[in-house]
Length: 164
Ligand SMILES: Nc1ncnc2c1ncn2[C@@H]1O[C@H](COP(=O)(O)OP(=O)(O)O)[C@@H](O)[C@H]1O
Ligand SMILES: [Mg+2]
Image 1 (cartoon, rainbow, N blue to C red):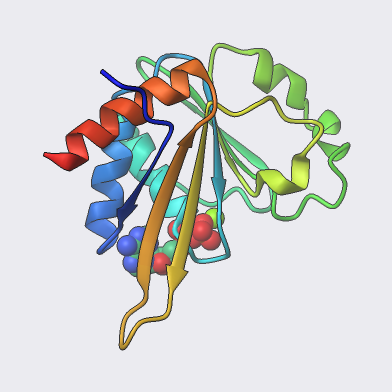
Image 2 (image 1 turned 30 degrees about the vertical axis):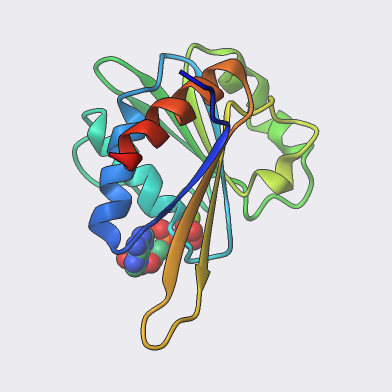
């Protein structure tokens, strides 16, 4: 199968966002780094919630805007959900023990990775969420880029699924 390193999908509503997140969740190994980019309200936390729930998390998924990171110990996975929006200096990541999170066998979901550059590992996948004003409702697009061997193989599998 030819490798694809990028594909786009429209997120028609929240249910589609959750379904795409769930499909991605099931392709993730125990260790992976995902960047979630896009403006406030684009759906980064909604996507993260779909992913966590697909991996068995029950209950709320809050945006870790003030705590910067929220850990989830699930039956089969350790997940760290970051929101770096309020990070003023990437070095603050050192104070919250960033390196420990990143060296763990864990999945790191990182919202606002732009704010932590230099102190973050290279991502396997970059998820770029955007929305464009349309007639009455905004059109939301998710663009997925595979940036490692793992990331590219996930994107290849997902894009094959979407084309069917
Ligand atoms: N297709 C969609 N995907 C994700 N969220 C959507 C969608 N349509 C509407 N929404 C709403 O948009 C908001 C997205 O917020 P959130 O996920 O917190 O964004 P972010 O984390 O990027 O700031 C939520 O209130 C959600 O209900
Ligand atoms: Mg968010």
